[in-house]
Length: 381
Ligand code: PLP
Image 1 (cartoon, rainbow, N blue to C red):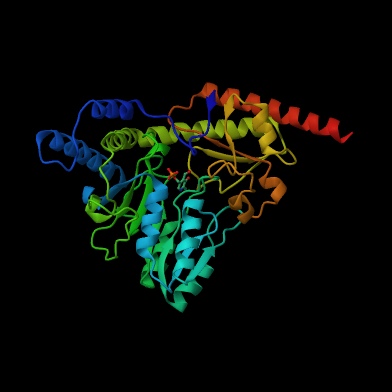
Image 2: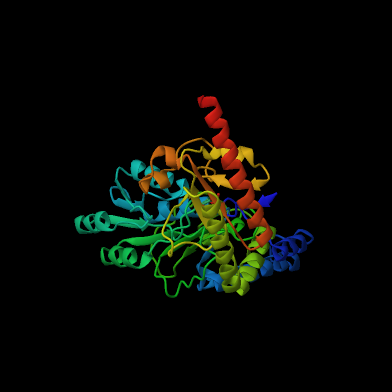
């Protein structure tokens, strides 16, 4: 299989596998005071330091969670207060949009979803209006879009939100470990990530909460008070160790990997365009994650193309959520018709993608699109 679905999940990094195996071979609860417990706690400490180095924060500002979905739930629940306004963007992952809808409905407040332009850039005018009206508790905007890779210019959003006294959260799930991030520079109050997008195992992630931000905790899990009361339950030491090792590996290779992946993406898009002249690349060309290509093949259903090339692991727009065949809300928000949204494939490349993978993907996609078109033409006759 040619694996080009890194935005769904990335293969486990060797370093993460080794750290996990080492952890699985030792006993100890990170909360126990005996030597075995201290061994587990030291693995957790090391992972926290490694993740903090990747993000440019301090270890004490990180809460380990089961992934970005949980981190997003924690962040929006903590940052939102009843009767207030929550501002997010129309192109967020359901792990933000659904939570935002739920917390504002429960708190009888207002939800504002910022629209985007045809390149996927967030429009700020409704944020300015909401801020002028007051009562904005929290603004949540993703750093990089999972379907198109489009990057959000968070600077102006942070400025407007902070001037209005609102907190800022960012879902950085697709960004962390792929492009450099420095939380000393990026003044968000909270940030979510999921380890499996950059080579850690599935089921482990983190929420960054900036030191000194005052907010009530609204833990989803209460019990033993682990993670400073934000998330009770025995720590997943092997998962955390894997997350730390993946963070360290990603950090040390970030620049090289990003440049190499961007070159491969360029080859992919060029190859598809020269073989399939009417295909269109979605999203801003410059402000995009290096590894994502969202490509529309007009008139050709993406699910049929995927079915015609099972050896290529790519996805259609909706694959990241439940697999339910709904049109992509991200592409529709960018102004694509429903038919074009349904004719769009997402290729997402990553640290282990090779030139050979890209050549095979171009050839297979060109063949599959042609086959689907031919089949559609013959049934139309
Ligand atoms: N946010 C974004 C932008 C994502 O792409 C994803 C996963 O695809 C998530 C959140 C949810 O991550 P997880 O399923 O690991 O909790």
